[in-house]
Length: 391
Image (cartoon, rainbow, N blue to C red; front, side, top):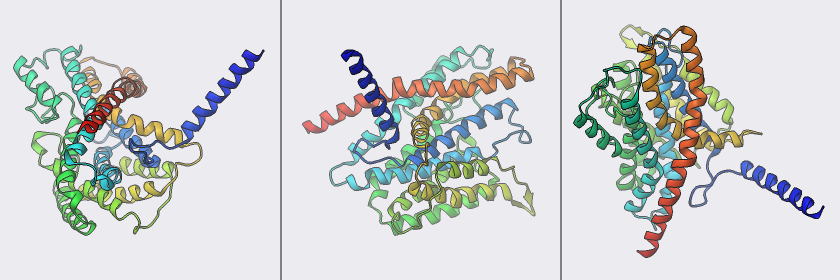
């Protein structure tokens, strides 16, 4: 009986500890608490991107049938979050941290999943059963794309991959910009006062608005014909996110919670494509307004908001899975693209398989996080700590 009672007490204690762990905010490697609402919003934005890609491929990108017209703006939201979080995580560490140390930490955080995403993209390119001969690229061309992709560098397009700058895994284009933002922070932006950051943000915001008004959309930058727009999309949100962190104590304290902020983001993304009126491309101006006005407000509110009762665990899970699902989903959707185009699916097949893709991609992301990303990052961080201790 004593053994049984002890086992019961141990089980209850384990359940209590697990519940307490789920109820406690995550912490960074240096012990800082995560902004759980911002983590949850990152997951919301990532899921919007996945749904947009699945549904867009299903309807052949027919604009009249696309549901999440403005979901590509999630990338701009990611850039804003990145600027804010980089400032929060690293601004106060430069007395003891070098640029080399910072860049090593960022590579450890981001690059394991970059490699996995590219390897999945290579597998989908070689093994896609629905591609036919559309993906018969020369071996040399494929090896160049693989090598460049593993380094996160742009490469020439591959057959059946549009004109993407990162043809083995299209979403890598935004990670390439993320790396540029991190380099700019390490060598320039961290040294600038808030006033200079604000001035640069305003200037880059003007360029963003003019570009959006000219093009009619901010869904640009992933392909070679619009490659110049990638840094334009990076600059304003990344600078603004960093500026918001520097000005955090002087700005209004908005509090809305994860669900209302997620609802605001989703509503912004499902708005219809706006027409051109009197020579003015209203859709581009709408996209720019989301990036320039709405997303900074969401970041400010998320920074001050609590997750809400019963929402903390969901926000934590959403934040953990957000990057893995963003970087691993597209290799599978290349196969989905070829299935839609060449597999002669019925409408019921399209709906059924399309719906099943969502939990499947979530499962892939969880596996990638649990068995690839987290173990590799833990190992590399431990090696980095040992290296720094010897220096």
